[in-house]
Length: 230
Image (cartoon, rainbow, N blue to C red; front, side, top):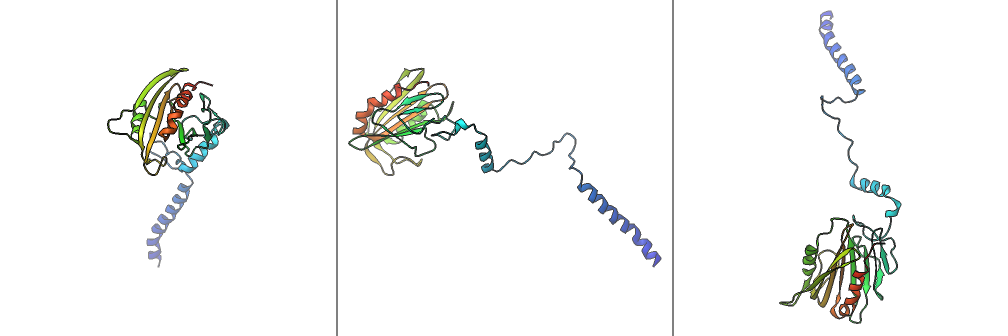
């Protein structure tokens, strides 16, 4: 019996020593090789990060219109659409309404006996939203013009801004972006403009029956000429 006990004694001691070392090691911070930083804290889930960012935003940002990187309207009502950096006034008779998309800065109904039109205004911030030509190309892709038809276009300076506009007629096609008609609309018209200035361009797009927009075309240009700083 004494020989058997003597044989087991080193084994028991080794097991006991291993347990003691393990307990002590659990209380120590993890060690990392020299020159290696400890891993950073995990990033919060996207929803938590968004909530944190929203909570940290200044109260003045809790306004109306676009939820993108662009400025937002200081008020959701009235004919004057204003942000911290620019303003413009809707033509008489154009009825402002709640934007149907969070991407829109403002939206309005254009009245007409042949049917109403719609104004949509966008602002995405400096360097965002694309240039004049890329937006004109995209807008023209939404209108099937008569064979050989050439859209009117031009530009002018106003109050420190440059307004580039386009006027196209034809069949307004269904949009794949969740807005616009669900079926082709013949006899329609599109008036679009990109107003460039400090803080990023403003995008104006009006669509509606040709007869309606023919009467409101000059009112549209009046809106563009009214864009200014606050």
